[in-house]
Amino acid sequence: MSFTQLFPQYNSSLNPLRGSAIQCSVKKLRQNMILVNTGLKTPIICFQHELKKVPITKQTRFILGIEDVEVFGEPKMLLPKPLERKCKSKLVWTELTKIWRSDRNLIKGFILNSVKGGYAVAIAGHIAFLPKSLRRNRKVFHSQWRIFSILNMNSKIGNIVVKEIGDGKLDYSSPAKPRQKQVKRLGAKRKHLQNTKKNTFFHKYEKTEKKKKEKFQLYSHGSYDPKDQTKLKALRPKASSPH
Image 1: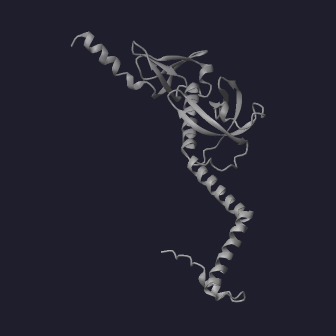
Image 2 (image 1 turned 135 degrees about the vertical axis):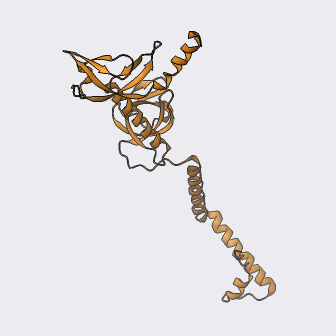
């Protein structure tokens, strides 16, 4: 095979390294610089202030992350501190996704500043977007703890859309679904109409008219006695029994 055929295969074999982590060791120590053995083609040079959390001895083993692969094959390395920060950010994102998909979709945060069309909200180290129409209390100042509900998350662009629920107390019930809200509202309205109907003048008028009709039927049969209520009850239509 020629060089032009082998070179693309050589570069493609390094693609799985991107985003992974490798174990490294200290090869040489100098005054301010450390030569790190990564197990790849050439060692990398780090400064002591970049490896603060790692004890600097020749027996030290630590993990470095591979950020990208260069054209000539040598990868760009992520140092332990940025790697740890990146891992924490991913863990927080997974926790936020769990909260978003759970029934109790509530999280604590505070409004940072106003942006176009809404507000920037700080939630667990991430910046979320709160639309202006979904803000509950506009009198509350910025940097005060509030409770939000996550409406949408996009991991590709790191976008989070939230809705304001209330103040900084996590004792709220989970936001009801639109169908549940509609059923509750209709049930309360029907109950209110039934209560108001019993106390109206028209309801009392219907009762008196019904009694007059029953008396008229007894008069027509010629057997009306005001004291005898059994005949009056017998003429009333019986309620149909449920099957």
